[in-house]
Image (tube, rainbow, N blue to C red):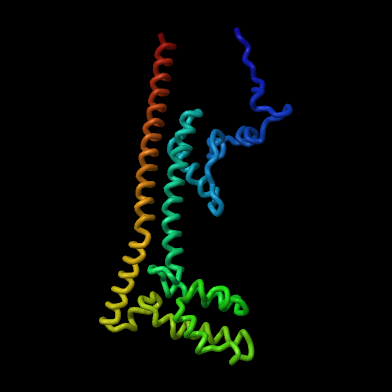
Length: 255
């Protein structure tokens, strides 16, 4: 009878010790995403949270309970494709938000720009106007504030910043078309209808100017969905083949 060798394979050793990637997996009693991801590394871009991918991968492992490298590889591939779908959707959203914060862009959201400018003004009055006004405000709003609130007319930067912020809050912001903070209970039916149409029109403008991004995202989603479908089929086929082999082996042993 052949004696079993319980020693650790040399490929898993480095200088006589187990490699770092193997030791944690040996200590865990239950399979997890880190152990099952030993054959591939997810592409995590700067600003992305690797814990989100870990949670996605773990959920798919729990759903499919992969056994062996072939199944683990397919489950990881599905997780990677789902992660890329999420990234593509966030990219489109980020581009739309970016356009909405550009005063020179047709999809510029003036209310959002005014709110952001007021925030920076309150938190850094010494530099906010010079640094953020041209980035967040249209030229006519900058001229309005410059002419109405000359810096030399105020004894301190704080007083000037308070006056400018109050103008933004009480005058410029409420006059912005479609300003979302206006309560519908204070508007007459005609004004409320005009406000609703303005908001709808801004949505159309935003959609028009990110249409190429949306089309690219749709193409990306369809390609990734096809990849997920292929990997899922392969995973099911592998699991089915293993079941057939186990049944065949069991039947042979009973003969």
